[in-house]
Structure formats: C-alpha cells, structure tokens
Length: 316
View (spheres, rainbow, N blue to C red):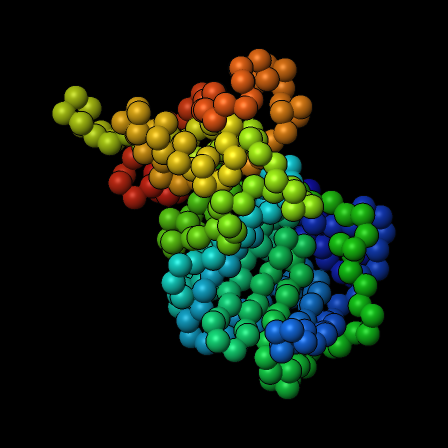
C-alpha cells in the first residue's frame, strides 16, 4: 500500500484525497434542516482520530440502531448504492464489525458505514471520503458531545472533496483481498440488507425513464447438492442482460438460475451500462438490445459451498 497523503499535518485516507495541495482544517460545521426539524453536522478529522471519534458518536446512539452502508457502483447513472438492515442491531455488534473491517471502513474510498434510529432523528455515518455526517434532533447534546471530544466548530468549513479529488478502493493484494465488495458481502451475510431504492424505478440522473437497458450483474450463487453430486458448489459470476427495471432484472436472474437448477444467493452489484459503453465483443453478443433476456455469462469462480455462504466459504 502506498504512503498515506499528508498536508499541513492532516492525514488523508488511502482511498480519498485531493488532486492538488489542500490545507484541510479539522472541525465541524452545522445547519438546521427545517423540513425535518433536526440539525446536520459534518465532522472532518485527520485519519488517526476518525476511529475513536466515530465509536464515541455511535455509542451516543440508542442501544439498537439500523445499519446503513453505501458502496460504489459501476452504474452509469449514479455513483453508489445504499443499503439498510431489515432490523435494528446492537450498536456494539456494529462496532465489532467495524473493528474487524477497519481497513475498509477507514480507508476504502468506495465504502461508507453508519447507523440510524427511527423516531427522533439520530444518525451517524462515515462516508466514502471518511467525513462523519451526523443528523440529530438535539443540538445541545450533540454539540456538547463534539466539544467534549475536542472538535471545534469552524465557520465556512472548506472540504477537500468539494474540489477535484481521487477515489480509490484498497489495493488488491490477492484475488480475495479485503476490498469494499468483500466487506459488503460479509455485512450482507450477517444482516439482512435491503436496497434503499425503488426497484421498479429505472430512470437516469434527471429522472427520465431509460426503457430497456443493459444491466451488468455480479452475484454469488450456488448449486444445491444432489444424489449425483453430494457437495454443494458455490460460485461467483457476472451476467449481462436487458431489462426495464432493477426488479425485472432480479426476476430474470432468478429465472435464469432456476433453469440451471441453481440459485442466486447474493447480488453484489447491479449496474446499468449504456450499450455504447460495452466492448465490441460484448455488443456482438447482445443480438437484440430491446429484448429482455440474459445474453451473456462470464467464466465462473467456483468454491465449496458451506450452506451459509460468505467469506468463510471463499477458496483458500
């Protein structure tokens, strides 16, 4: 891993840093969100302070909260996908997960993680720039907490990520290194994560309908054991298909897998790719871009399936 970027004593994460020299101040700013009747805070810290402050802020939430995670997507029309846990979990359990995946949580420029509660607005979220975002209904409590942590209010706080900057995932030392997708896979195996999006919607960044679109789907699947093969087989695969919405694409993948007596266990990425951005070889395989069909599957990576999926079934 390369040397961490430093400017005027401020340490940047490996996965997000300015293109040009930038004197990033530490501290927080805030504003009142009138519509929701809560306060919004942005907290910027040098890298070495992020983890202890994040844990203090998460511990200020109620005992149980919903997990929220945001991961980079290859989708042409948006930058990220946001997922939330189906049920609230113990905050201490989330802290243990972050400790185990701190390299990704604190340094991967394609990954964000946090927690929120229902009822009175309370959320703490560490984004892909490793800026901490706080949404809270009680400004006295939150500003007192920040003061206790030695974090000062900064008027007109400038943020390096408002200027040209880089985003990188952690360098992959091996094929199965701990990058943001592997972290997401582990999180999804532990908690029932739901995509925070209308799955029937298929619009561009301006809200205009796209119609039939090419989708690139990265998934984890498995073939159940049978009398002829007593060992369940897991695999990673990438499918290309044409569909009019994420919901339709999901149904098509499941039907495609069922036709092979297989099952899609986890969707790692579902990205819309304009036809003109496909390679010439892939475009030739998509005979009719207006037909809803799975038209290509990549070579699979296979592993022994242990009935639970997840990282403990990855090949050694």
